[in-house]
Image 1 (cartoon, rainbow, N blue to C red):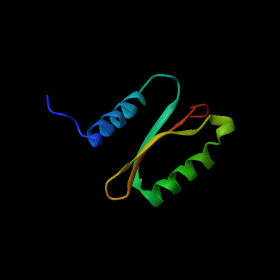
Image 2 (cartoon, rainbow, N blue to C red):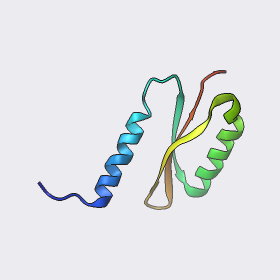
Image 3 (cartoon, rainbow, N blue to C red):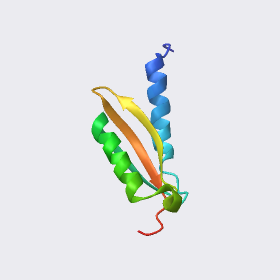
Length: 81
């Protein structure tokens, strides 16, 4: 077996996190992959639209990708869908 590089291990861990985001725990999740500036704006917009106090909204996980891209998952309660 060939030794794994740290970046391979990090990628595998990140992929597991995104697979876990499909759990059926009653939370609604939305995944995004955007350039850094747009990702920041999207997260702010999402948090404004679904305030934490009412929807338990949070950024569940995120990771930096090559080319200054950010992949992230926003999580919230679907209380008024």
